[in-house]
Image (cartoon, rainbow, N blue to C red):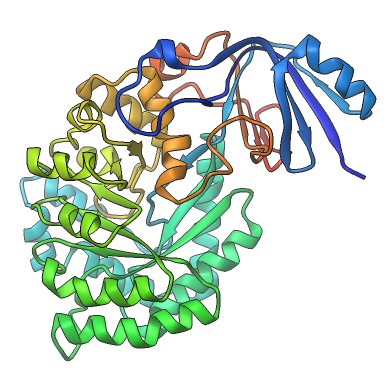
Length: 417
């Protein structure tokens, strides 16, 4: 027998339904239901509407009544579509060096950066990596993140990348959230690899990707297309092989130099992430494609560089998602809503654009349609905020946290418990 629960009444239910995937959004476009309710059926949403109108259905199906005793706004669970939370070690030294004037590239050349995390991650066991992921997902849960993308990319050998992907899969079985795994073996050329970029990628394409597919470790492949990582021409055969195997593609694009956006568009990637260096040319390419632009303000804050041109991307008609890029080097904060609020201030984003960027537009960046909105048949992923108006959430710049988080129809976090 299905299990039903009726939540409400809410001062506001912000459903995020019926809104366009691409282009700018005004706050007046937000679908806000006053004195609303959400009827859950097992792990999905049965119906959303006026609380008084849902009572009849709730009584018929003998729903459990979850009545609220404080002013509350209900929104979808947030989605962090780009993280690197599978890692071991700290890069506090890198952070100090950057603040003292050293560049990201200079630190990498001197043995810091990504390679420093690779060394530490290789020394960690699969169990240790999984425990680290779970600790970080617990922090994300308190911020209302109910779906988390997690990348490999700090192993950079066949067995070490498999170790990371297996750790992510194991953590997904234990975490309150859904974890979406991505293979980022094309992060950098490992310093201890006896060969060039093309040989390394060929090895990953013909040895790692079939293993990842056969073990059902991931259906997504990412690459860092950047000077010092992988060029547009070098990455092409790797992406062609991955796509032929049915992997969804995404690209670390235009972080320091351009070129990655063109790769994302040419290879029909689901998203192009970073975009801090994107120019009018890249913005036009994205606007004329189905690729989701993903801004990562955490990296801009961590590196002290400019933000992705979010306002220009939206005004050009792009779909803009916002993600944390939580990683041990350039984006160690990991608080998505704080970062999105800061991005909104500097890029002049509306509340609607911010909320869309971490809900249904973020879901699109992961190729998911069953979350990021509150509608019948969608997952029962809910954030409950102790306020009477959604504007308070961005106004407090991420410091107003949800007092309850629901995942797949179950309450998985409450400040009162």
